[in-house]
Length: 419
Image (cartoon, rainbow, N blue to C red):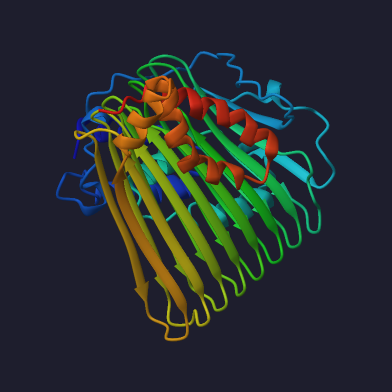
């Protein structure tokens, strides 16, 4: 076990609040869990040296950090500043049928209900999910009442100062027939360390539109997860956009717990320098007639490293499942690295499933052709690469978010040299 994990456990043992039963369970599991090494399959290509040598510290002083403004976009802002929820940035008049509360402020009955869901959608195999169980204190519970459509999106922003360590946790509950849009956004300064996990309970006939923007770069460490439980006829559409850093790791779990659930997941990440981004996506089809469409695209330049593990598990009762996983990768450098592992595990006989992965390099002849026509090398790179990613940006349901992220992607391409 690492010194960092020993320290995290020791700090968690000093916390006593309404989450005590869950915290004790997480600490018990952590005590029995080995620190991941290169021999640990789930961390084979993602060394944890940046975590072990991190000097980030929990900042107890109140700090006001503001999320980046998005043009032509208005959201209900849920802001965590260095792991603490900043209630001053939450508007006082929430839409009818929407509630946002810290777990400590819930009634005893509400706390009991929240404990019944807490850490049941996120699998226990996630070691940093267990760390988050143990260290998260300002746990936010968001609920949408039955049949209520919330038109204004919610943005959950995890904001970190330089050198800060933060552990944020949110539980989102959509009652039957409700709908909600949620944006998870990470914004961090240098030498920070973050674990950020959100669990979504999506009841029958509910609709969730979800985004996770993991745009931290440089010497930041960000490890987190978005975890979804879909009941009968529930629908979700998730978009992930990520840049690399010293260590960026995201786990996504989608559980088809009810029949006729529908899930769409589109993910794109762009890496440069010596950055690392690791995306693990697991889909559990446990009920019949479910559908999953998963598209993951990655562009890697310089000496950066990308990791993708996509697993679709079809349980014996999940007859008439339709599931498809497609992973496409583009290398811009001979020294860049992509490790991809798409998996299908099927135990039902009446299903339609497919998976595939490709790794290719940019067409240097096309790059040369554009340059001979007077197009600068940087501009030519953007022209050749942007279409690869833009197709997924066009699939984002929210046009304002698409137009916000599009220029950031272009700027990122300008920094990524083909060599």
